[in-house]
Image (cartoon, rainbow over all chains, first blue to last red; front, side, top):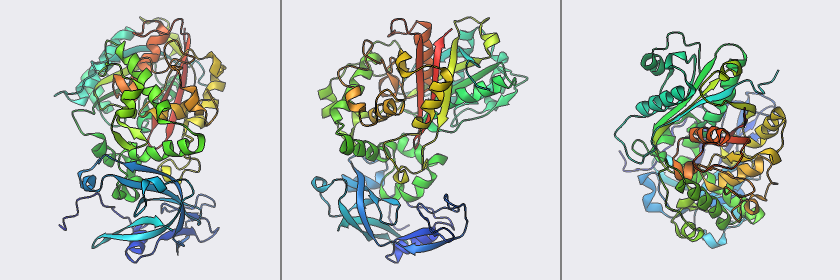
Length: 135
Length: 381
């Protein structure tokens, strides 16, 4: 045990490259190898052309705030020490969205359209989480 | 071929709703079921179809406890809080197909005394994607996952927390009129505004309860319904609807539109009525915001106008659309919407604790994680 008491992902063979990417400081997205549609979260089939051929690409790391919440109650004891924290829903220029915590952004700055960039937070040896900082 | 009037609610049953028990969810579910079956004037062994809520008793429990020797159909409709209303569509389909005569839809839970929501959702299959990609970030419970939908609605349309408070206040008042409700002390908008923030913009009084108890209904074939103990409540139209990106709200093209928006036009068309014909609406209320959003998706007002629609007591017994006349999940008890179906039947029978005068036609919705919807429109027969 490493003393990390928060929820951790259980990657599958299909999603492991995403988590490996974060550990290497890369935000990786799946792209259909046939029609080129980018998708997130990782999954086996392209919903545009139903191809099962895919490749991993590196996202540019830029984003725009689509919505957010500031959470004041921990629904799991591991997150109590972080309260309050900001969870951002962010549009990526690649055409998908993602959730991540805000780092160094004040609640008063939040608005739809706020420009952010992805950063990487190595929370334990084998787990790095994405975060967003002001661009 | 349509399910229009292909079945009727013939029996309704509830247990006492509680916050604290040493009983099992199974015993609540069976007690509520027995109450619904007796209400219909049936024997437990007359039940030939079962659609229990997806997390609880299984068909085998009913066969064993009720001595059913010829069960002809069982299924679950795993749509979270939309399960109960979606189960009505399933029941009508198997009745219409001639498979069953009397289908029991039931739920029992120990949401207060057993596993709480933050723990429960980690075990639910519809939370699998969220479990890998969002829960590790600290986005765990529905309040945290839905708050960005409410925030987006506020930013785009100017919706306010005080408008959401109107829903909480009206619903609590309705609960205060019930014999069987767990939260009966009236609240004000100021009480709502000073309740603690859970996940901004959702405050404590925007959130539903955790409850112990059970609720059930019997759906019968129309030709049998006429001969039973109570006035049947006919199902005029119904549908389920699944939102885009149903397992991850984050990826949904429009955060402010739910699966119900796809179901509503189908159900109203099947019923052959319009929104103006609805006398009473029991609308799934896991959060105040979800009620407002569903009223838009049901077509009672345009997208973005829900905040204004719910203002000034509009959802009260004498308002333009009486909503959640039993006190809902916010104030009666969280029975995952089974209690909403029970209440709609009571209203249309004319014997509700907080009766809407002359209620002839009403609707009930279900809403399930992460946005599944179901809708049934009914009339008194």
